[in-house]
Length: 148
Image (cartoon, helix red, strand yellow):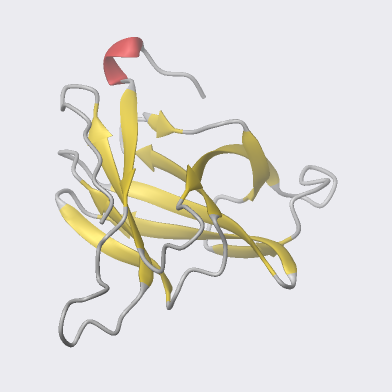
C-alpha cells in the first residue's frame, strides 16, 4: 500500500550500548515508536530453524516495545510497520503475514499458503551487536543514528 510523500517516514536503527554498564544483563531487539500515533509492527528473522515472521505488536505513540528477548541471533532482522492512517514503513524483503496475530514459519509461497506477502525493511545490526533498538519516526523529524 503506497501513501503520499508527506506521510513518508524514516526507519532509524541504532544499537543500544549495554555492554560495560553495571547490572545490564539484558540483550533484546526493541522498537520505539516516536510518532504521534499507534503503530502495528511485524518482525522477520532467520535462525537455526529457518525463516520466521511474527506479529502484531501494537506500539503506542512515544513508547518502546521489546520484540525479541535475549541476545541477537542474527545480523539481519526485518521490520514492517503500519500506522492507523495507513502509512507504512516497508521494504523489499518479502515475507508472509496475516491480518491477525501470527507466527509463520518460512517465507516462500505466502499466497499459496493463505497468507499475505508483505515487504519488510532490512535492519543490519552489525556482526557483533547483542542488542538493537529501531527508532520509528515521521518524515518531519531529523534522523540520526548512534551505535555504541
